[in-house]
Figure 1 (cartoon, rainbow, N blue to C red):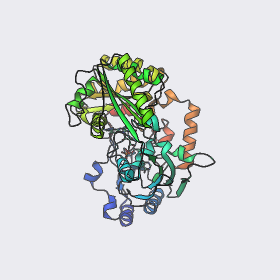
Figure 2 (cartoon, protein in one colour):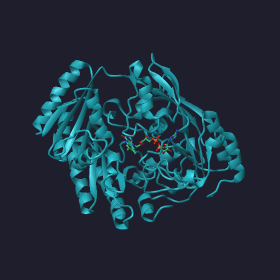
Figure 3 (cartoon, helix red, strand yellow):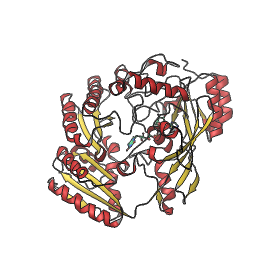
Figure 4 (cartoon, rainbow, N blue to C red):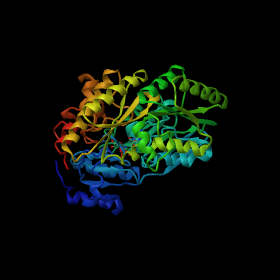
Length: 487
Ligand SMILES: Cc1cc2nc3c(=O)[nH]c(=O)nc-3n(C[C@H](O)[C@H](O)[C@H](O)COP(=O)(O)OP(=O)(O)OC[C@H]3O[C@@H](n4cnc5c(N)ncnc54)[C@H](O)[C@@H]3O)c2cc1C
């Protein structure tokens, strides 16, 4: 593995991409060392910022000839280390490819470039009565390419599904520079579903340079409801009540007392009741009669569960404010500690309360501060662990509780990730969920796309072979953080 780009290759890449498309000065490379999982960092050899598929393909051919690994990157908001450069890698940053290439209102799709910021797409199509449904809380900055690679979700995934349900076709540059088209405007069509397989592959199969995405009609009526509860377990019981009653909400989100406190003291203040132990935000959308019917049922279930207060957003401005608190929650956490470990696990919705109680106990045992943000309608938990990484003991406790939380969720019949992916962070837990045969199958599948293993090596799969092309060692994220990483 080299830690410097060959000067002749650097000159060829600079000539191909232009001065704004090729970065290799230490200051620029420094900012690419991590994504939003900041516990770990690796400086890349160089960063490429191509403007189109053809230039991306030409650059990838050069890197392939040189046997160099590639880490694709969008906005770097990923929370599992996917966009952290693999050791010895060149980063391909798609953020300059951000155009909407085609908008087809009649057939409700858009052809976009991967660097387009998620929210910008909905803004650009709203006058046509359309929106792009997947809405990660980072949607103000994260890119659609990153969303596709992570199969991102968001509060409204409950009704509309995660990104995979909204991708019709992809243009992908493979590790050797070959350009392949997967799917198309008619969706995935007959044959094996390669678009589905690519979505969520975390940069390990190729670089997306263009995508055809589904647009959805803007709902005619929306109602946003807020209930406050004495504590999070009680709120979880109310969520179970909503699910059991068959209420088809667009979103059901829950946050706990510490999150409320932090949000209300920040610029994201939403007017959540400060004396509450938890709040649940429910959004209903659709036909006015259905929405009116369901809002009465939601209120009744909240009251049965002894809610402390209940309110409905009266207009779009108030709705925006209620969501601002929820979507700004992670940002607001910066107020309470220097470091935050945002975890992502899933349990069956009926096990939410049990999971919350066990996770709280695991954090209390390790003297760690826990704040909970939950896509409750889907059983997708985000335990946020505050810690100070400068304190070795506290760092060790934070890394340790991660494994305990994963174990709790798996033992309750859950899974490793709801939306943040496996990346570097969770690869060591993959054998807890998948058999050796299943992992071998995933590896073989990856090799069909990237036979030399040059696409984002060392991510997702836990075996040494997964990263042997460049590293020859297994990555154990939590141990490597404690060892001081590559910093
Ligand atoms: C405050 C905050 C809130 C968040 N909320 C949510 C949420 O509600 N739901 C959710 O799902 N996630 C959430 N996330 C996580 C993150 O925003 C998503 O994973 C998002 O999809 C990452 O997009 P990005 O452009 O930042 O991608 P990056 O972080 O740059 O990359 C993510 C992965 O995608 C790969 N990749 C990027 N672009 C391409 C491409 N063009 N081709 C191939 N591979 C590519 C990278 O190699 C990496 O593996 C949140 C993060 C933060 C910081």
